[in-house]
Length: 266
Image (cartoon, helix red, strand yellow):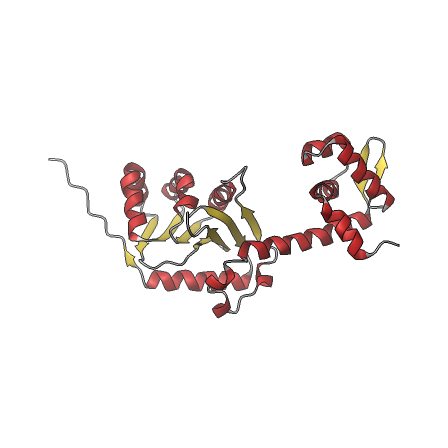
């Protein structure tokens, strides 16, 4: 009789096994479907499916494979475990540097959060996630110096503000000056909309704090290069309370951006 530990080791030993089971949870699929989804070879797909059938995790009907109730049960448990490890990995070297402990937050408060890591093949995944959040929010707030996160989506962000989205941004003075000098016309139009308030702060946290309506995001970056490593966002009430309080504390300590009025043409 197989042990639980042995079954878990069997499943996670190959990333394709987890991917195959996950793909079958959503709906029945053919072997060709599974090769396209996972990128695994035909032989790898065949071996995994045979092993799953032996365990009664999947059943075959014609050319399609469907997950059984027990297979779905296993997939759910493994996904929950993998999500916990992914969350712990994202915060591993950062937790102590974040003011979480003082707010009595724990990793369990981030269960269910959306974790969007940058990868070698897709370093802009966190940027795409921000674009998605911005497209749906009515009130955007950000505190930090995450140029690598916001600069690539500046057009989408600024157009949403010009179109009526409220925004409050707390920037380091140097970042604010860089944005206004590098993108003068876009900055002018955005500020002229009256929908954004910019504050300046010299000592912002070592992470980006993003608030989109009821959703709170934390952007983690590589300290040496500033490259974005991951965006973690959640609707958890405790995290949201912490995010609101932290943002307001930085805003109260900040100075408003003062823009010289444009000279009138003679």
